[in-house]
Structures are given as C-alpha cells and as structure tokens.
Image (cartoon, rainbow, N blue to C red):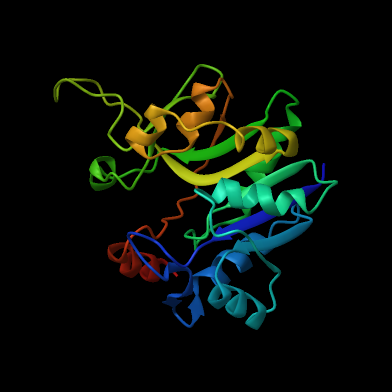
Length: 240
C-alpha cells in the first residue's frame, strides 16, 4: 500500500488569517505539521498544497515539498485531489490538516492501518478525551458512531443531546481532523454536489455521508489540540 501525504494550507482564513505562518516556539505552524507528519514511516511522499506564495516560500525555507494549487478550492479535500491527480500510483491519500501542529505520527499510522480492511474507503480518527469546554465549543467537532465504528453523524453541537444530569455518562467523541481516502474515492467525493446539511453545519464530511460514503473512525488516546482561532495558540504552545 503506497501512501501520499498532503498538507493543505491556505493563508486566507476567515477566523485566523495567516495561520500557517504563525510562530510556535521558533517554528512556523506549517513546519511543525510537516515535521510531525514526516515521522510516519508509512507515508512515501509528503507535500504541502497551497495557493499562496508566502507559504510556498516558508516550506522551501525549511526544506519541505510544496506545490501550488488553484485558489478557487472550497476545501482542503479539493486541494488534496488536485495534487493527488498529479501523482498517480498511490493507493491511499492522507489529508493532514495544516492547523494540527502537534500531529503525531502514531495517529497517522493508525489511520493508514485502517485500509488493511479492504472495505474501508474513507477513514478518520477521534478521541474520548474531550473537556466540558470543548463539548460546547462549536470549533471542536463531535462524532457519533455506528456499531461497526463507521461514522453516523458529525456536529458542532454536543451529540447526543442528554435530557438531564441524571442521564448516565455518555462517552462523547471529539473528531480529529485527519482524513485518509482511497485514491479513487477521493476523486469521486470531490465531484459531489454540496448538500444543505453540509452547509448548515459547515462540515464537508456530511456531504460524503449524505451520498452514502462510509467513514471508518479509528479511536486514539493521543490528544493533539489544533489551532482553529487565535484563542487556541497559547494552549498549543504550552503543549510543545
């Protein structure tokens, strides 16, 4: 199984412009993501995909692989598909979010190992490590599973709703934004039309579920906080 790792990174962000280039204890965020992903022995080639020359310049500075993409992509998944189309011969494409500076190669290896099951076409990861604050934070995505560990639903809200404090404790799952796809499936899902449900939650994975693409969720004990907004920076720095 040959794996292509792609780190989509864009400079323009509604919540946090310039996020990939912020300094995290002497290294840019994109450098920390790249170096973390590079530790996975299962990834044959790692590429940053961006539409901004400033990010290109930074990746070249620290010696990484980088490719320019169109500036019209609506998601990192679309950006990954453009790069993957230039590199035939890979069985699995892994989308490593550019705002995960603490990404752990063991998470990536877990994700890639899911494809040893031939029925898996899309995989992602989640953790039971979720605080009360994260549960109510719309920037921390929650996921429910089916009995075979495929995703049932993703939401920015706490799911399931619990009616009272008397409700037995539920093991909520926090989604970690790492995805892997069979190459064929990646090309298929990027051709799908957006859906009202996806737009309501602003979560592209709901589009894939809507069109009946199963997403296998692999659970991890490794906690890797991401940076979604400026408020997240201090906590991530404290973890470095």
